[in-house]
Amino acid sequence: MSGLSGKRVLLGITGGIAAYKSAQLVRLLRGEGAEVRVVMTSAAGRFIAPMTLQALSGNPVRSELFDPGHEQAMGHIELARWADLVLVAPASADFMARCAAGMADDLLSTLCLASEAPLALAPAMNRAMWEHAATRTNAATLAARGVSLWGPEAGDLACGESGAGRMLEPGQLLARCRDRFSGGVLDGLRVLLTAGPTREALDPVRFIGNRSSGKMGFALAGACAGAGARVVLVSGPVALETPAAVERVGVESALEMQREVLARAGECDIFIGCAAVADYRPEEMAREKIKKSGERMRISLIRNPDILAGVAALEHPPFTVGFAAETRDPLGYAEAKRRDKGVDMVAANLVGADRGGFERDENALTLVWEGGVRELAMQDKRGLAAELVMVIAQRYALARGGAPGG
Ligand code: C5P
Image (tube, rainbow, N blue to C red):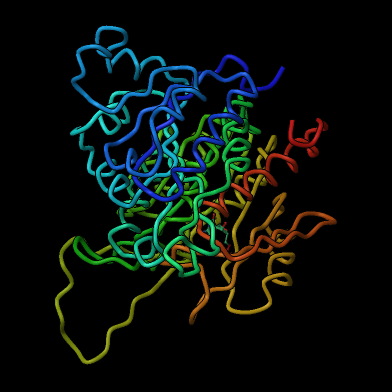
């Protein structure tokens, strides 16, 4: 029996050339035993005939929010509750914007808001539209809210240009649907992560900080939750939304972060140290704002505890993963860091100049564990997080004597 057998997929179609591929997607979904109901926006009807989708899905196709005939048979809230998965393919730039804004001015946007089922969007649009700052912001908002963005991929586009903006092929979307229902690689596991920078107070208004955006840690927390784990994210101050189904604990300093981590480390299966923890803190914090006086000022700093090494040194440590941001030789430093800190795996990336890493949306990683190395190519931090979670799940299973990926 396929993993899609009996699953209810609400397929939304918005206006775009790629809408013709949705007909094939309906066939593939039904071929695996899924029940499919199609909802189209009014623009989608210009690209593909509702009759085609009705015949292929075996169910009436809907597009009006207030259509008495349809509302009587199955009201829109009922339809929202019916779905095990809401997939919008293709999702236009306009639809992504409306979804990100939480609009409910037509049937499909209303269903996306009203349904508690997982929501996945398969974007399809012109390259410049996909790269536009507005679309990037909308994509980030949706992802932070736990919406899966499947694609787009790079290739020839209907507008004659080539670049990122092509909807994934129906077969690829089918595979994503299967994955979504197949249970996660971290099912039932408890994951504790640190993310973001720390702030080390000099006085009540000043601190020593760093440029960590927290994006990698937040993407990882979301990916772990998506893979079935119960996730607690101890984060320094960052301007990011907490990913869906993640418990967030906000901290400022390294000492606070250490306290919150150690209070929970004994009860987690996997610990991922993603935070850019300040190595040193001011030896003393002035009680009042420091006034300017002489030409020079000296601040005495003392070493902060290493949170990651502390967790790895526990009597019964969880599976530990650390990060290493390096300006050169990531492999060499990662291996040294793995041994020095006694952790199970280190993920190293190059930072500085035009590379990924801090403050960027993209990153590449070199993973090192005892006797193994793996490169994860430069990509969006969310995609990278999903790949990293797969490797962590495999290494965790092997370290605990189970089957890889189990
Ligand atoms: O030693 P370095 O700062 O390069 O190590 C980076 C790794 O160690 C990251 O995983 C980071 O979260 C963790 N770390 C920590 N506590 C510190 C310093 C680093 O947990 N005080």
